[in-house]
Length: 66
Image (tube, rainbow, N blue to C red; front, side, top):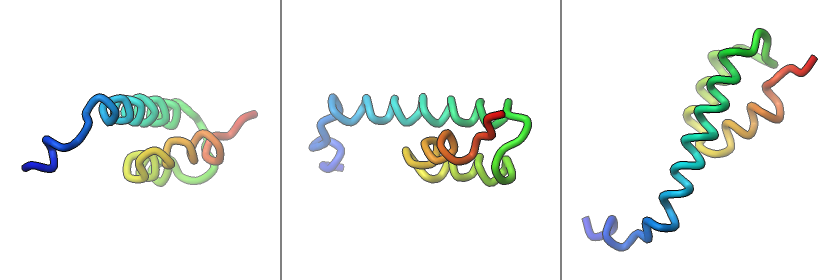
């Protein structure tokens, strides 16, 4: 358990918060979107399991604008 004491939580905590906000925003957007580029269930899994890159990929590739 010494590894948790060595972590500088002042630097890591904002990254966790940023990831949570980004993931929540992407999931809500995915659920509200009528059509996406690909199945919604696939995008939900990508958003949840591929940490910071998943939501970014959804916003860049997954959403259909138009």
